[in-house]
Length: 412
Image (cartoon, rainbow, N blue to C red; front, side, top):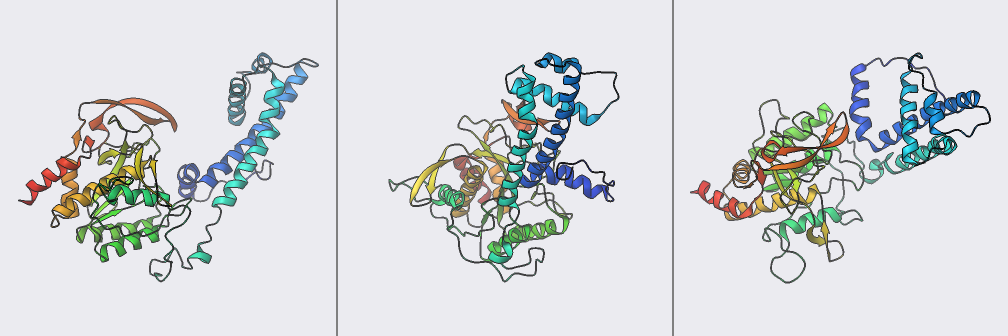
């Protein structure tokens, strides 16, 4: 549908590329999602008009109701998939708007729905359609060898998440102010790659990992995983992670909140993204609540997720010399990074791979405990019961004290 009019188009020449766009890009892109919503609103508008004409022809002069609408459905009529979808969606709208009057549904599901969808798409396009990278950064994001770019502006209006993560890891302890960091002797190396809105360029991520490793980082904390990793750029990140493994650094990444089973749907970066074997220094973290249960909408995976960590209502440092509570995968991954830093500070000879093993072995075990977890069924949200050990490798929640005891054993 182009400008509200149905157009005949040729079948895609490259079906693989089309499917990648349809099933990967569209669901995850905010612009793509809002554009899809606009296209769907045009379809609904077209069929709403058709339904309205048909009913007025069948029931002239009558105030139309939901019963009249449903009586127009003919199971013997020629199948039209779009008409079927529009009919079901329209029928459901009577419940949404809590009415049995056709006129109300007609008004809200017709042109008004298109106007709302168009506004949503235009807002998304304005917000995410360009990142002004060339003007701000000045590099070619598709050239990994173009490395002389960037700036040292770290304190921006959207830096709050990074400030809170730093506080979880290394805030000064027992000074009567704010929160206590897990490893307050840790040094924070801030490398900004994540935009305020959207997702980071993989070139920036790969180069940031390389920079951190080359400047002595022991623990590297990345932004949340993603499923959109073009092949060539994926290799940049994989190479950087391998270098981190060689240099003994532990790399930690939080999951995305999609209720997805990562054993079935692959997210990046991950331990298995290199063709020459699994990375041994890489940890994937999800958030648990104060009762030790997994947060409902976190991703999970018996072999893809390593460990859970507290990530709800975490009190930490905030911008402007203030303190706030934060919730999310970032808080959970920062907790694991803080525990890893604590272990490293007591046992500096341990490698990132060893620390990963230590953290997995020293969890507060939740094995055998049945918990409720959000899942996706036919791409729709649902819930189910799981044993905790079917959700992650460790079957538990990170435990700083037990990690120190385990590290002591390994170091002897």
